[in-house]
Length: 606
Image (tube, rainbow, N blue to C red; front, side, top):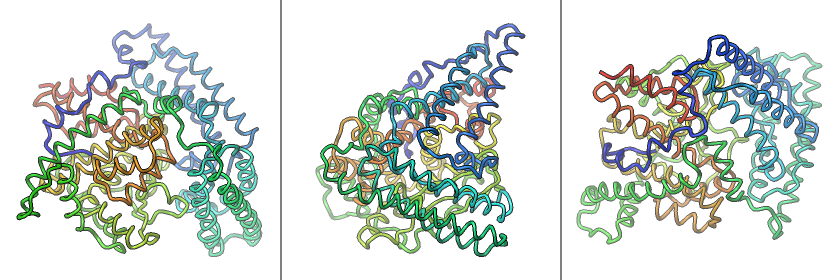
């Protein structure tokens, strides 16, 4: 989330091109010195066969994730995370790691070498998660069956009657699933326990209301309806039993000095960052970069605030502290926002305006045949983020993309006002750019068209989030909002949130700062409203590393664009940059850089 006065900002962006290269995965040389044709062909065939077999076996191992990306072959299967199931899963990844290590990546062309590194990272990450991070032992929120059932119910990939039969069959393992969860959770944290209780209460509502109503109104045979009633009773008993078990444990966890901290510490954090983010930065380097960028953005905001102050405070002296001046100005103009009961509808109405701007300025290729549906966030997904995207995968690319927006009906008047001031008239536009057009929604539509199934399936979070952040700045640079200084000021406030995400996550998880220190950072240095800051603290206690993905990906994407501008001069074409960048699926930005740079320069150098 970053954009205003352009070249000055680029030159100050504390990011070097060298930092964003892949130190352990340099595959460009394979295009220059190819091995003998026979060896090359054999290795390429070997890897392609491995890749295809891995993906098929991966869906057997992860049928729920398959449903999310539109692969429905195993949609009726719900794996049970008991000791046997987890051991089988670990052995699966160990076996695949041994197989991929037998392939000589140096004999693969760049497009396949990049797939190789993505798959190897996926496999090694899964092993590390199971053997080192072990969140199955301390994160009760890992256990929630609702999401996949919701996708099956809401996605028209086969007749509704057949989908309901699939749901009934998949429900058979729910009691065993939650029983395994209770056995696994030997060391739960307080924060994850609270989230699990909240979200699984939403899961009960999904089965008892939406799915039950769909079955009652369906043409299912009487025998199927009877079986559903039996399994519905078993399901609700299992989920409510899990909730009760957690609710009984929660007071003990809150009182005990031995309860596991939600913080994972430096060693685990550094490794999780390596696997999850896949960046040229280390976790500490990114933190240092974010700290420097925070100072630079403050200076940009001071410049804008000095110009705007006479407009809103004509006869009032500016505060001596420039950050107080900025906060005073932001607080003053943030009262311009939608009404609380119009929040979701206002987002729904703004999407066509963003689409029209992108198409009128030919910024990115848009596909109007891929629907975007703005909806209220399902209850079983609430409690983590106020807005999010659920997009179909490459196997069912024509299915709906859902823009989930959590309504404010669960907030007090004070909380709702604080939230609406945070997502005021200007910031709501930035949010919609990020989540929808041309951010997540647009990028994920392109990702599904990638020639590499690997790059589409195993999407890199830093690239996905980074693109959404990049588009915020790009849209304002291209004239969205007519360069209104208030919009740019709010953009920088939003951008500070991205920067602060990285600072906050590292400071909490590694440095161990407490809630009050975190709130001070967000409210007094990033000008966030109290409700937003409290929500971000909660999120930072529930996740690790993910909050750094925004700034990492954005920094690397923007740097790639500026390096290509310098390399091609007048030949640079922004539309072509966007379309080519998005053609590589959701691959890590360092990999896209390796694949894209020389090719783009060759095509656009005059």
